[in-house]
Length: 259
Image 1: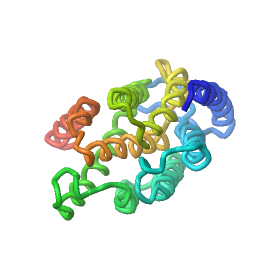
Image 2 (image 1 turned 60 degrees about the horizontal axis):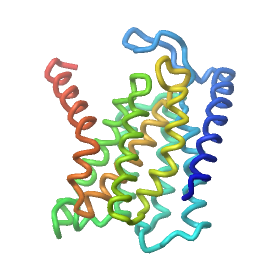
Image 3 (image 1 turned 180 degrees about the horizontal axis):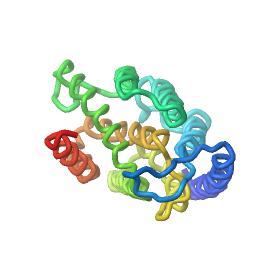
């Protein structure tokens, strides 16, 4: 992907987020502050829908219409696009209506299970222990998606963390002098996130909602599992250790305090 496409996606994203803010206000698609909220004014939400609607056709275009090396594409790549779409639509409905956490967990379980053929689970993380690897894969991916969701509560925080993660993926590809699907994901989502941060930095004019946090959780989890399956678990630890440990520690403390 050239700098031209990166810049084009960035500009188009800015215009799309501006339009979405206008539409969200008109349709009352907003997040009203509560007693535990970090914001004090009613703010448009579900900006993650724009992220998804820009990312999906961009990724499809580069995979199927640009001369992309199929050797580096995951097995049964169509499952990636199907699961990402269902996740995003389901999460957007959750933003609108609210879905019971148990139902959310069930849907997440099945979508992550459907996504499993995308990875070489013989190598994740233990060699030739497919059943154990499948259990660990399901737990890790579902847990990680929800941890990413939990970090979406402070203006600009999840956006900045995600930008840092995807920049790390691109730096890795530069050092290794190769290009895989996770690098393509990073190059497409980065200009979208950078443009979103303009509206999401304190004080936020737009929230991503569960639509955005679950969408990002699926992408970041996908990249992380792909790296672990290729023996690069140390890269994943470097990129996600702060988010993973911080949220896990907080959850443990809340559980011990009876929440």
